[in-house]
Image (cartoon, one colour):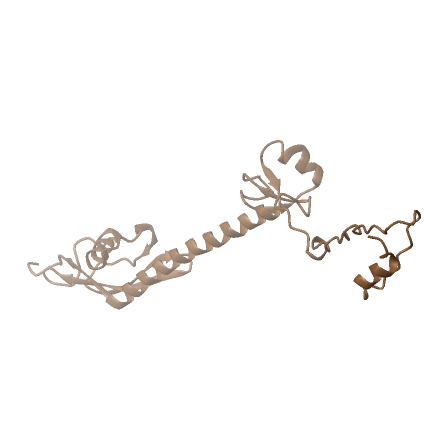
Length: 212
């Protein structure tokens, strides 16, 4: 466009603050767009903690036993062994695996499940002990001698277990019942071990049979 050189361009862009050199051939100045700026976004992975690898063993001397090993531990136990012993014997024999984060979580989950199972067993034993104490007395009828309180034979554990079952609907382990020798009518103390930490106590009342 004749007559509109540098001055004309500056008039079109009064505030750009750019200096345009004159064209070498005396013609009009051609404008070209500057290359776009390339801005790389800040990488975020530098600010994040490294992810844990469930298959990475942070302590190579700690392993999880997959089977019971004499003098070492039961299946599922977390043990510390020499690295060479693990590499040369335990792992090739399928007796142990590395104690990875995933394996440790499985151990903890299994431990909690076992604790819950044992807790439930103990709770049932305590409930049975409460039932025995609430009922208090279990009556057994026996034949006696005509002139005294002596019974024929004695009261057996089986008879006591049957009396308890009749009133509670629960069957006691005969081997867990402690009963004194009973050869007369009367009231006697008995106990039953319902759990390693729970013992039930109750009374056995021996009465004469009416037709005695």
